Image 1 (cartoon, each protein chain N blue to C red):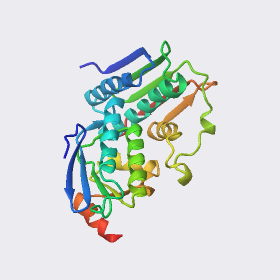
Image 2: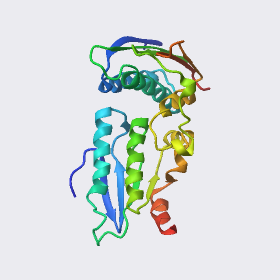
Image 3: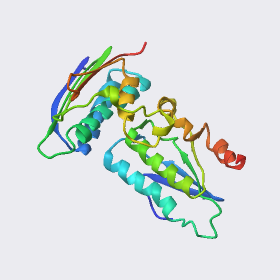
Image 4: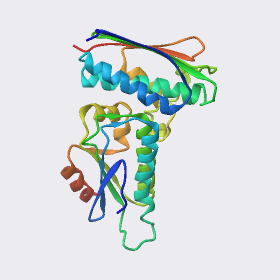
Amino acid sequence: MPDFECIEIDSISNISVVKLKDEKVMAPARIETLGVELLSLVENKPADDQDVVALNVLINFENVRFFSSGAINKLIVLEKRVRARGGQIRLSNMQPEVRDLFSYTNLDSMFDIRNGQAEAMESFKEN
Amino acid sequence: MPSKWKYDQRIESDPDLCAPIIAQLLDQLAQLNWSNKDAFGIHMAMEEAILNSIRHGNECRQGTFVHVVMELDDVQFSGTVTDEGAGFDPETVPDPTDDSNLEKCSGRGVMLIKHFVDEVNYNDCGNSVSMSKQKSS
């Protein structure tokens, strides 16, 4: 597993559990790095790889206190890529302000957001 | 500790120059005991306004500037961001919360500014936005 600057990754069964490291996801250069690292999760798992049943990604926001719309755009790109490969994405452990941001922008209709990581992990079994 | 903070700078049209300004703003909000919820909203609104001006107003052109003015005390925040672009009509921006627009980037910034502060006004040509917010009780 390569080292990443902005994320920590744990792979559990066919779920990539991603923890965002930064408390403030704001600086454009940092957001670009985050986007590249998130997309590498998808790009490292080719669709024709027989070992990959589905690509599921869980993103844990536990550390994040401030999040910008530029970073949201990176999540949207990741969601599209994951969905295109037949996978699913979950977001979890958001601070109330960050959670509200997704509500205000109606992005909670695009992303399945769960309170805790365990609940999010379990929810992959629902589909 | 000062009870009032004022920021008045013209910055070059480089998106990387936004984060240090927002970091200063967050620091001042914390020093003046604004809640995390208020600070989150003000930071979102100002960040969107500054980045919109740099990227869409001035199109990141070298030699152009964005004028950022902020005033903060322990009860009120006000901010104005002005670019050198032709401006835009905020009423014509597509609704970013519409299902068909969710995956598009445009319009989200304008909506977030409106949502997170109490009052937002654009000048006639649309290249300057002013906003204000009272501290929540």
